[in-house]
Image 1 (cartoon, rainbow, N blue to C red):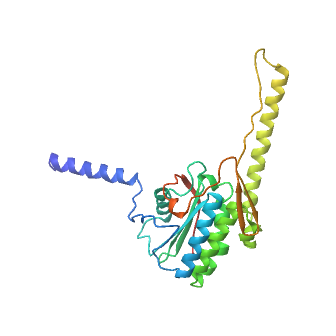
Image 2 (image 1 turned 45 degrees about the vertical axis):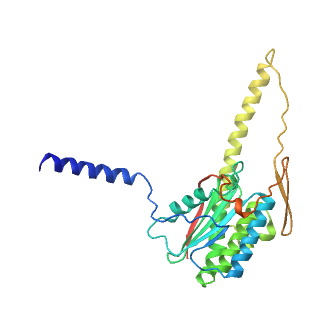
Image 3 (image 1 turned 90 degrees about the horizontal axis):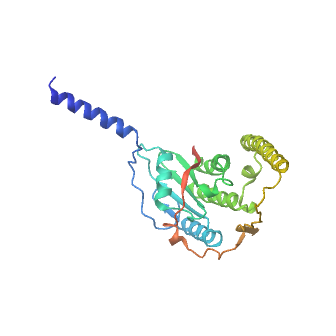
Length: 265
């Protein structure tokens, strides 16, 4: 084997290694045209119109930006890779709150995923997303009723994210499968440890006394709150409420870190 052949083999090997280190997206991200992009053609005109109005109202009144994308096929791409690519490219959610979420449905692959922005992860947890997929969306999908599955799934996502119980199915709100319990146990353990550390720090501080020349003060933080009455949504905040429409979803600047859940039917 001559020197040139060896060099080419080495270069090809290095190229394969480098390509394996980065995810490859064989699917293009569709351009933003609104909160509903039904490339998989599973929604009726009426369903698409109603969902678009619903999500536009949610965005206007709460600043939470959710969108739906259906596609014919993933063409071999992992749905987790593709959905987060779409969410990041569309920049769902406000930059200050990362309040975005995306529902992706790959019809021929029979796969779906809920992608959640950083700001909604405390409420729209991985466990809750899994419940919405298993208990709300996929039962309708198995019957071929994609429109109802997507509509009810989105309503439950909004209901959980905004604490509007009127939008959340009982199978999502009252599930006792253990997923939420496990999260509560972990949170409880963390709280106990954290409380012990804080208590120890306070005790040490009291024993040591207050240093001369030190000063203390109180700082008040006003957080935005969202209140609901039935299906109506209102928002109060220390700043002016959001008045954006669905056309401003793209460019909102929300960030995503991979939170959410995937499923099949």
